[in-house]
Image 1 (cartoon, rainbow, N blue to C red):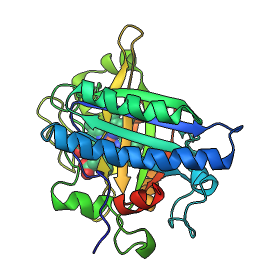
Image 2: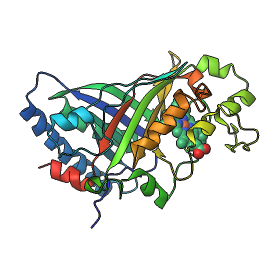
Image 3: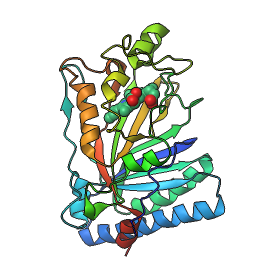
Image 4: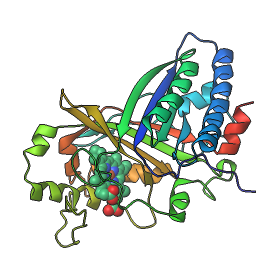
Length: 310
Ligand code: HEM
């Protein structure tokens, strides 16, 4: 039987918590491992319980593990083939920063109450041994738009293609059913963005704003986001971005999150965006968006998570 994946192919919904935790340095490896075991069991428990109690709530939690944590927790060797510490990508104008992360939790639910309860249960356990370094509460903005006003997610794989692009199959026999998880927290310069006429904003994405229609290749600018992020029909990832932020400080952002069967696909998209293709032709969305975090995690299959839970 094929290993079952975690809920990586779920669709984005109304409310999401993104949590990144780092183990504290002064805690013994034994203590960290024992809490990790319990957290794996808790994640499985929360998913099963939500499905049983609220079958239509589209609630789930996915656990990802960073490279250094994998070693610290003494998880199986050899490691997943492409699991490494993400290195910054430094372009002529913009940098994709790299930040530390031991465990990542992606909690989704239609109802905020359920997302909150699940996140609170996880935090209650994690705080024994780790500090939360990123907590982002993402929300669905209108018809799945980013706060820049454009629909985000249209060209995502749908149906069976989600599993094909998000979940490891033949790429790494040992880690079948797993996924690479890459996240970046972006903050937007909304004043500069809103000062841009809509036709110019459309050139930044290569799509129309209101109706979300793709521009024809002849008119789509070469430095638009979709021209650079699209690296071919056979190289896709499953994206679940959500807007977040503080309205009074005008500090709004996009939490970029994707699941992929290979990290090299994500790396190629990022290189196109930050270095440019050709070099220097970087993604214009970056003139309005700055990375605050950037971390790679590995999401073990559900079966492996179960085995980790002891
Ligand atoms: C500031 C952060 C970002 C924002 C606001 C954003 C927003 C968008 C929007 C509005 C679209 C067009 C609709 C759609 O197909 O989803 C799009 C497409 C896409 N984005 Fe992003 N994105 C961001 C970062 C990224 C990053 C970091 C990657 C890859 C590592 C990426 C990969 C893609 C891909 C593959 C597409 C589909 C392109 C196509 O096939 O037409 N995006 N994004």
